Image (cartoon, rainbow, N blue to C red; front, side):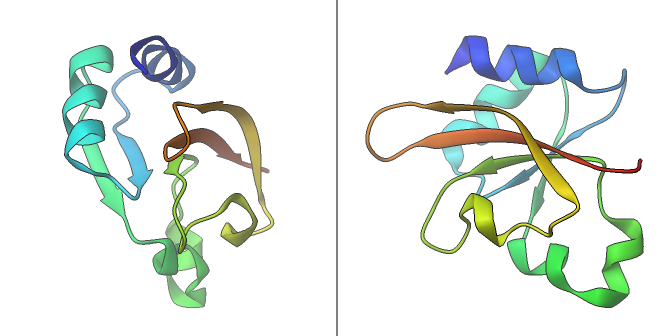
Length: 99
């Protein structure tokens, strides 16, 4: 998982934290270790709430789960990279169009 997380950190603008959906203990430790960036956990529902949509992050790291699948992100997000780490862990990096 390390090389993928490191590549995510290289995609983001300098100094920007990693906004992540479905952060577990492993991901919460690996992101700062490999990227040197703070992790900001997001709730998938906050990306779909109209009053908050104006403040959506430009970049989002999604860890796949029952509640958060790629199709559940708003349509203005496009997937740039994805990687599976065994049968239960998928990570994908998303960027918001027009930002």
